[in-house]
Image (cartoon, rainbow, N blue to C red):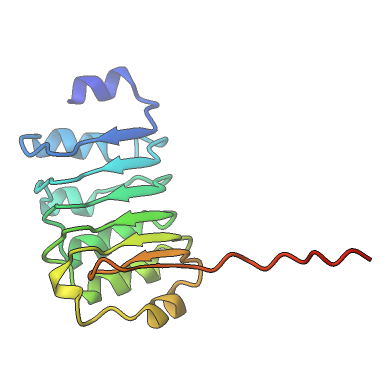
Length: 163
């Protein structure tokens, strides 16, 4: 994996979904501050989050982060969103360990967040309140809730008044 990262240092999208055999040192080198152009990162079904990787996760231009079906927890989510504050779209679909505490912190850290997917997160079923999420992050336009229901911001009213 490191060989590919060195051959293509300007890659904007990295898909590591279902990659559980990645050596932590390779992942650390790939996701540290040297890769300045990563905007999309797919970590679906990954369980490779070691303390070292989490603490050194530096992807400053990250816009889309997919943790679906992964082992991400509240602490990991907090640390990563603290260093990647420009995330626009965050997917936590089927993350069985994430609780509202982690989501709340991610909302606080990601100041531009527009979409969040919380579908099938069993620890969030009773905790998620759209109004409190919108108060924490008014930029949100789409929230997929644990029950499978989606909340989408209404389209702005367009005036057709011609004077």
